[in-house]
Amino acid sequence: MALYLEHFGLNEAPFRITPHTEFFYDGADRGATLEGLMYAILHDEGIVKLSGEIGSGKTTLCRVLMERLPAEVETVFLANPSYSRAEILHAIAEELGRPPTDGPAASALRDLQGHLIELYGRGRRVVVLIDEAHAMPDETLEQVRLLSNLESSRHKLLQIVLFGQPELDQSLAKASMRQLKDRITHSFRTRPLAEDEVAKYVAFRMRAAGYRGADVFSPAAIGAIARHSSGLTRRINVLCDKSLLAAFAANTRSVTPRHVRAAVADSEFAPLSAAQPRLARAAAAIALFALGAAVAAGTLWLMQERAPEPLPVAAPAPRTPPVEEIKPPVAAEPAPAPPNPIAVPLAQEQLRRFAGYGAGANRLLRERLAATRERLLSEPDASFSIELFFTENSDAARTERFLVRARELVPLAELYVIPVDAGSRYFLRVVYGAYADRAAAAEAARRLPPKYQNAFQFVLRSFGELRSAI
Image 1 (tube, one colour):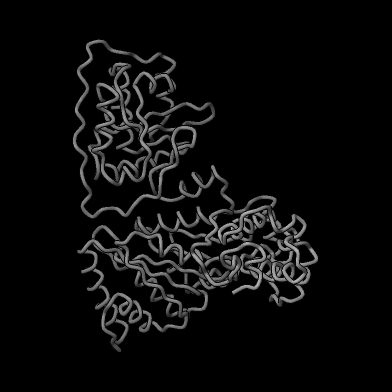
Image 2 (cartoon, one colour; image 1 turned 45 degrees about the vertical axis):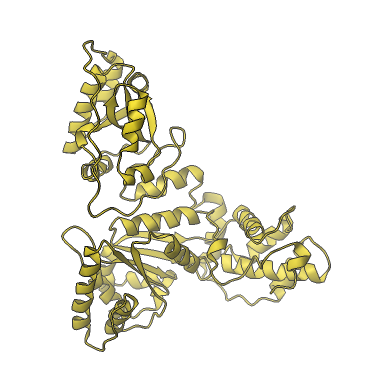
């Protein structure tokens, strides 16, 4: 137990270097990366890769990922990078409860495939998380590629996530690894923290450990820690822990650059690659992978294959989508609104703006746009619909993919896509159903599938409001 806990009013040591999921800091794009990893795993995204420098937080991300995946996901964590082709198959099988065997790789692969099919039939998903993947032999990485081929008629039987140092990227760049590299659908990277992010990270860890009071680390001390750690979280932890100990020894409750210098003198960090310090400095200037509040809600997730995410101004950001049900529930058909004898036409300018959004060769989107136009021309102002999301990502192909998935869950005839002219580009509003009043729409929203209940924050909109926003 750290000597300084009582001195600083801490419940536990705030800067342990072992992965501690309760101390997971979701700023500096860590939270967005976690969400991206979860989405890729839960939506059959093939092989996923996370790379980063030593001590940049990869293992902590892996541990948090394992905790937050749904209960129906079986997780296999492999920390030994030196497995042979056969050994990695036996290791996965044993983690899934199969008895240990010593057979050849081909036999082990067949046995594993049979077990995965059995698990799939029971509604279970399996994800293999491979730590230190940069140290795996090439032949074992090739076996990982073969594992990624295991699939049912519609879904992958096994999801694979590779965690490794930048050397993993170098291994995958080899000509012999091009088939594996082509199977990697998403690549993430943990970057060093900029100085302002170091300050937030340190404050977060202190408060997570029970500290309540003014900042212990002075701005100058934070600057020194940022420089000497190169923004790597493990080094930040080491320097902060030793700095607190130095302040405790000096009987002060404020950490200054003098205490940080003592911590640096007591630490022996290995030299980084030439590119790493430049990356740390560049992070503050250009935020190479930073996603900020708005970008975390949009850019990273819009890079993934999922329904477009709502803008904060329209509705709160949706939560992480749950696992796709093997037999998804079907929403009850919404009760149609009473027929309206009087048409409520759109103004010519609104029609022009609506027509300005092109669906291209996307058949479902073209059909839904035509149906949406007819509904907007005929529905009374007082009728209501359920807004699922409002997004600035108006890419037609992505919307088409959303519609393909949506027709498995809800009657596609009740989904309406409304282009919103934003000057130089379009936003999209996707709504469901047409109901006589707000109460009927609210009741219909409660009957939508659980997947939509979890993924979207519904907003009830009148058709008068929907038309006026075009």
